[in-house]
Length: 308
Image (tube, rainbow, N blue to C red):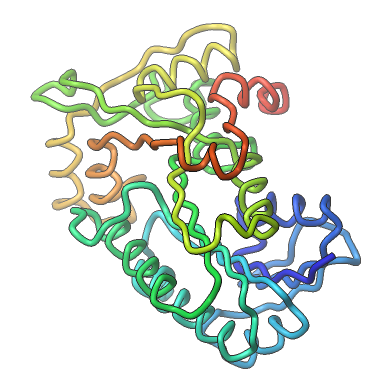
């Protein structure tokens, strides 16, 4: 049994990770920003506040033998202080420094696939900067870099559900960003991985010393185009393949320049990221973890009934 610190514990991935840690018999010190976990378990102690609060971190890390840092965002909200640099870089530095200060040596960090400093998206740039902070630290770290994470409680799957059921704009189709003049150019691939597999890997990494000092790209067993993924989802949910609608990338990027951010359900970085293959070399992960994550269709089959 360990006492494990988890940041971002009330989020989509964080909640799944906490459940997996509890299943393995661990105690959890959960750092949450604005709401407690949706778990009624005496083995979880919540610490409410921001990760740039050193007092909060020192309290939350007390008696912990491992730390898991999961905080991340996909869109910024500068008006509320929610920026990529603060959430990815500053918070990572704060947690790493606190671990060093409190003597918590074992550290697992969730980054993102394709994160590098030369990326065109600020999201990936700041994720890469956070990785550099971790790698430069004296901690016994492991970095996981998942592709698109899906699950019943995730915002992505909830959005797909509304589209597939015709309950969200554009109602008659499921839109995706496409290359070329009309959005029908070469399609890019994504390798969706289930939140349960990500949570398992997070908890498993703590218990596998062979993962220390390594980064792992992580994806599911299937590589799909966005259009194929949407068709698979709609067929599983409704029994029918919903029409897909390519939105030209150039047009989407133009909208991000001329319209206020609050009027769009996406930002420039998300458009750019969609035009890159988001797939993983799974050989290192499979070799060290001894397991291959589920494919999209198989994982979807386990939770799709709850979406209907």
